[in-house]
Image 1 (cartoon, rainbow, N blue to C red):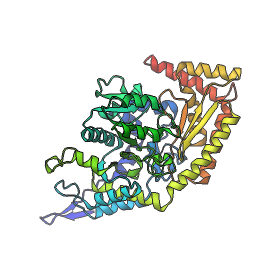
Image 2 (cartoon, rainbow, N blue to C red; image 1 turned 60 degrees about the vertical axis):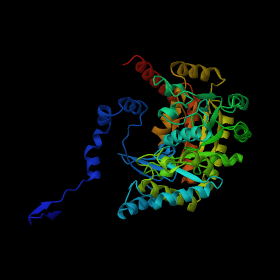
Image 3 (tube, rainbow, N blue to C red; image 1 turned 90 degrees about the vertical axis):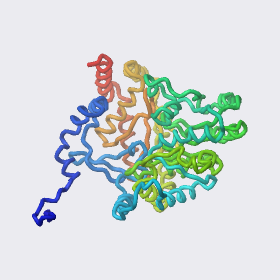
Image 4 (cartoon, one colour; image 1 turned 135 degrees about the vertical axis):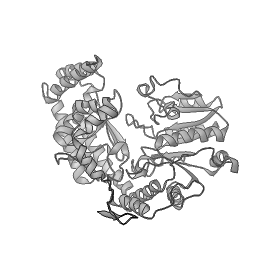
Length: 475
């Protein structure tokens, strides 16, 4: 295409073609990352065989460079709750761009952020105010600051095995040493108690200096479930001791567990709720802290404190548009009820597998957040094979399930944490019955195969164990 310059001469119009740039360098994707980004992640993908070059995503599916279709049970760690590239999300973002809105003026407020806040609070009627951020981690950082300011106290209590993010405040609340090691010292006055242990929580609160207790209603690392009374009684303890109860719903919220918020399963109304991931529609990062007017006004208490906390890109128009579209999809397509229905079906299927297969210890979860836990078998041959694999790297057995699920059945799924024996399902909420059939048949095939010694699964175990030993040796 040609344009006319001021002198009247024809000039080539500059066009930046993203699709052409991707296509031209597609074959170099792993080399580019190894050279300029995280080489270790590339080596992980190559070791477990997921380096197939995904080129397209739609709904619950991915396609690789060879055209093979995969069922995605990671959904970008829960980001694609409404599915990849949902038309309504795309339309909302394009419409916001076409409107040429005066984005991030900073000396004004936007209509879209007000609309998204209003819509969010409609789902959480006991809370009054919203603070927008760019990610779940940023909402955790905000919650720590808000709690300290609102209560005048400094201590933050969190749970073992928790994951609240990787920036310094959030990392100080992280219950997994693999993420913390080498990054200390972390923030002071951040104290850990065991998950599901009310006595330990009460002891931590009893000093009267705790600003907040932050907890995931269902822990993402391991899909650890609370006892039915735990969250309700924990909230009551917090109120008795003057601490704020903060629910980290970054992964569990927005319909994931078969309720808009997971705390609804237990009738709990937190002082703060943190959400992110699915609110982005999978396109533009956004997080939100929902809280009471009383807490909010302690932070933003006067005009000269109107800017004491914020973020440059928070409330940007594209994120707000994506968030509004995501909420519209969740509501109009009945995704909360669908998550409850499909999750109940899958959980029942996995519980049946646990009864029939000795390597499957248990299955747990709510909605479409499910953990399948494996454990040491009783029969001698299986026990010996398990012991060899686990001696090399605790949790390695789960890779003997995830790798053939990917290779043979085109299912992308993850282990629930470092050294974990739990495989975690966190699929999109738009899955249908045929996808559930796909999952059940694939898991049944791979798990049944794992009970054959010798067999393909255990041969894979030897290969992965060799890789692990070489990695330890720095080779």
